[in-house]
Length: 272
Image 1 (cartoon, one colour):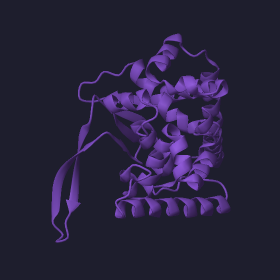
Image 2: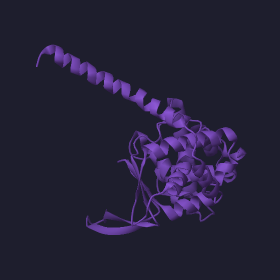
Image 3: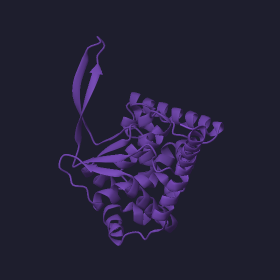
Image 4: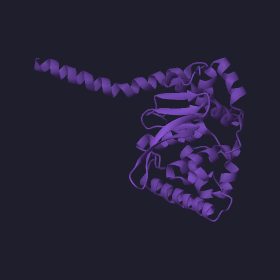
């Protein structure tokens, strides 16, 4: 093959790759500029009461994020569940709460959301102290993978949206994991800018994580869902649920943690 053709092909490849982010942003701007469907607005009113409590500017942001999210992510019904706009919009609205006021890639590692009618069983292999591998099944309400998908129970996604003050929201929980997984496996340290900020995040979350462990050890009433004591990744996800659904409680129980989450998510649910 002549050298000039090789050089031309290489140049075309470079231009194509460098132009992809621009094409993606153009598509997203076009989606955000379109009118929000009227029947989607009805779904938000019926299914996501928290939407009505948001300031008007955040309501507008959320609707635009929903339009991009629904267009880019594939929803797959499992165990006979048929996907419709009720499911898409209700889940997208809760997930996109985590994107308000922030520059976002719309969960760039996520390709699809698998939705079951209710809780689903997951097969797991565990190795005991003697090195023997045991196959078991665990019942889950949600699951986040760094390999491109989130799995959700529709019943629990509905319940999480309907009760905005119980501190439990499976969609917020699993999509907090997605943010955490943007720089690798979930470890409770989602990507942030600046070394000082990352160091402060680590100090504050580790201290709050240790305090939750101490409350459980002393058999005190835990300030967060005890599941958050499982590991730092689960602590971040549980704390995110509380931040969006029980902000006053979290601000009183863990004021420094609340401030860190408010700086990370760039919203203040205390004023909603």
